[in-house]
Each structure stands twice: as structure tokens, then as C-alpha cells.
Length: 523
Picture 1 (cartoon, rainbow, N blue to C red):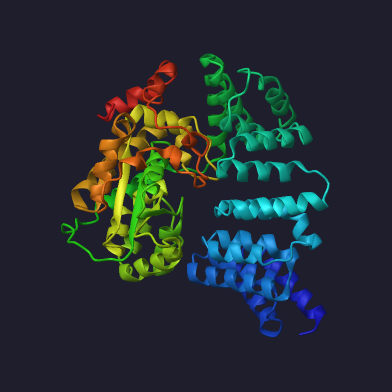
Picture 2: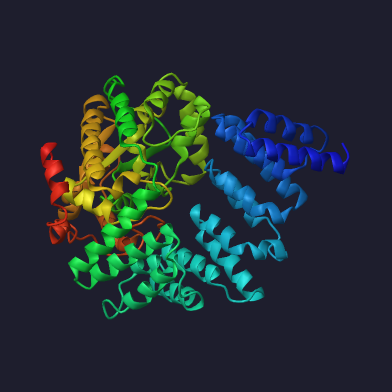
């Protein structure tokens, strides 16, 4: 096929995609590859089409093939497109290798260094992200996105003061860039309190046509007013930001309810027998902002325990085993389909994705709160696994979710008080179901007990996981490993109970939430 024919095929494929005719588009792309197989963008388009058609294995295979072509042909202009697609399949090792093995002296790499460094810190490769940014900064003009990415890498690495300085540099270069204001507000308190409010308000006015930017700035203003003790102003900003986020969301509460109801239909498992597994996965789950990171940091201090951070590996192991894209919570149809997969194959896939993370450790913590919805599947695929679920007083738990702007479309229930309360009620009922049906595998851990008596709680948790008690592990300030969660700044402090009852400062506007939770029998 001559170049002219290839270009014509490409235009035809693009037109078919635009018209929604995915089968025809796929045929055109495959015709191109039949005579010119080393086309990374064509592979990426085929991966996207397979994804839209629900064919997980094909979508993953094409993404990997595209990345291989980028590597082999040194198509550094395509590097961020390939790594972004790999991230959709949690292909962390491939993302790491592809970026680190690229030629960082090439203009195409340097021009995309802000994005590529973000892809590195999204897979917890913070040192590599910093090296890439520093390389770019030596060769390029100052840019706010480079400083913003560097600030996040520093923050997640625990270099708090350096991160603050980088956020400020980003804002100095781009005073209306919303995400730097938002990140800084949640990273470190202003001194004096409220001193950042005026410049955030100026950024808000400058981003009047961008709802997502406005939402982030409203949340930034909430945090600044909250830190300054002005609850009325803080609530106004929080409510405005939440309204914007809910308007941007496609959250379907009824569909979520049906999916969780389907999980309740999963039958109970027999009590767990002793296992002689060499490696024991430990899943830390729950609603976000309820102590999952604190518990992860305690366990990570234990000599026999490694920490993998917040992985999506189990969802992708299910997806590979069932050849479908898995969401969390799963839909009712998804639960039905997943109920019939080869769970042993899913377990092998998960262990293959995580084996390199154990090192010399016998246990590995996977702290993804959303895995609470997969607990029944985890127990079937990984009989040796232990699942620890944080359970917090429901009003505090809900408020901690409501005042957080989560990345992407995660936790979309959290932007409306009624939907938030209903989700919390479903969560509590599901936890009770897992406690009844997964004996020896699933343990509910009280947040209030964790922060008021961390030693006793840690001792019980470690015993449940088959670990000897290590009292020194309770001092989470000893844990200097990176943390890329929403709690990344807070977990550098000793364990405290200051957040218990924090919702009471906003008792008035939270009254509908309290009433709805009370009506559900959990307040």
C-alpha cells in the first residue's frame, strides 16, 4: 500500500469513527496495519475502539503493541500518547520502562516532560519524575506546568517545604492556573491564615468559562476559609464547588444501588483454612478519607510488610480474566459476568502484576479503597489474602468525602449530600455482608479505635494478617516512603484524633445529611 493509499485509509477510518461506525473504522485501521504494521497511532486507535466495544484483552494488547513500536522506532513524539494509554490498563512497569529508556535529550521528550513526569508520579516513580523535570528545566524556559508537576512529585515524596515553594513558583508564572492554587491549599496552610484568598478569587474570576477550573478554585477557597476559621464563608465555597462537580458528573445512584445489591447475592465462603502461601496480599479498603492511609503506613513499618500504594491491579486482573472493562462499584450485569470467571486465573494475573513489589517481604499492602466492592472476588481469587476495611463514624466519614475534590471521576457520589448519605448506607450494609460471608478473610477496623488506641488496634490487625506484633510500627512518622493519596501531606504527622467530630463545625448545613443517615439507622 503506497503512502497516498495509507493516508486515504486513515482519513476513511477517522471519518468512520466520527460517524460512530466502529466496525468500519476498525477494518480500515487493520487494512493499514496489514501492509504497514509499525504505526503506533493506528494501534492506539484500535485500542480505543476495542475499549469502546468492551473488548478488554484486545484493547490492552493493542496498547502494548503501540508502546513497543514507539520504543523500537524511537518515536518519542508518540511517547505520552502511548504511556497514557498504558496507564488505562495499570501497566506500570511498561510505563516506567518506556519513559526511563527514552532519549531525554530529544526535543520531543523535553517538550512533553510535564506530562511524562506526571505519568511517572502517577505510578509512584517520584525520583524519576524529578530527574526528568530537572533535565527539562536545564534546557527549557521556565514553565508553570513543570513547576506544578515538580511540586506534586516533591509533595508525594514527603519533601513538604520544597513542594510548597514549587507550587508558589507555578503560581508566580501562571497566576490564574487553578490546579496549583487548589493543590497548594490542600497541601499546606497559608501563613497568615486567609492570606491566599484574594489571589484565588482573582483566578476564579479569570476562569469564569471553565466549570472544572472553577470547581477546583471553590474547593481551594473552602480550604483557605476553613483553615482561617470562617465556617460560613468556607461552606459557601464548598457548596459551590460541589454543585459544579455534581453537574459535571455522570453518576447514577440507582445503577450503583443495583450493582451493590448484586454483590449481596454472592454466596458465603467457608471459614478460611491456614495457607502456606509465600506471598500474602493485604488489601486496605473502605470509603476514602477514613484512615486507610494511616493503617497502610502502620503496616508498612513492619519488617515483613511492603507497601504497593494505591493499585488498580485487582480490577485489571478481573478485567483480563473476564475480558471486560471493570468499574467500581461494578454494575449488576458486571457482577453477574464476573461471578463466572476463572478466579484462579484472576489470582494468578494479580500476583503476576504485583510479584516484583514484594522484594524480601512476605506481605504486601494494596491500599485502594475501591477494592471494598471486590472483596468477594478477592477472597475467591486469592484465598491467602487478607482484607482490612476501615469503618468511620458515618457523619464524619461523609463530611470527609464531601470536602474533598477527587481526581477524575472517582467517588462521584460525594458531591451531593443526599447521594453521599445513601452511598454511606450502602457501604455499611456491604461491609456487614462481607463480615458475615467472608470469615477469616475480611476484618472491619474502626477509625476511631485506630486513632485513639493505635497500638491495640494495630496488634489486632497484625494478628489477623498472620504477623507478629511490632509496637514500633505505630509511629507512622518513621515511615518515609512516598504517598500519592489525598492524605499525602497529613500522613507526615503523628497519629491524632483531631478529625473525630470535625463535621460539627458545619452541623447546620449538614443537617440534611445527618437526618438522612439517621433515617437509615446509622447516625
